[in-house]
Length: 163
Image (tube, rainbow, N blue to C red):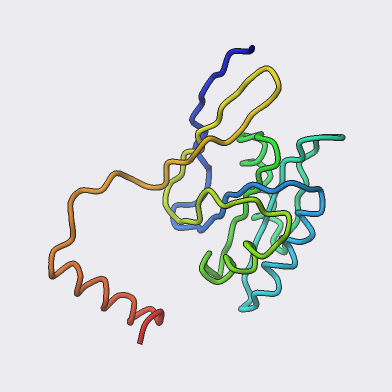
């Protein structure tokens, strides 16, 4: 039995940039995630990286924007957990690509999809690393009142997600 160390790895990204962090299980993940995001349309720019957990154990990278590919690769190197992937988006939102990503056969699950600051909680053993969870944003400050409900509903209509 080996010792388990828990680390908090902050995701490094611009403040308002959207990202998706998930787990997958096969080298084909990079190509299939690329197609899933590209096929979502809307001119989304993206970069993704996948941490291979067996064989040559490389970080596999792709996307249509070199800066976002570099950002994804840097964060994948920092997280370094087996079979995780990280995807950064510009000119689009996670809601635009989530169904496509969840439909990729290799995707096991999604840890978060957010523009918030994220800390990835990583367990490290003698064998390797695993993501055990994420801290997505901050602790709530209270419960919404009637004005907050109205503001939420207006915002969703203003940005086109509700009619």
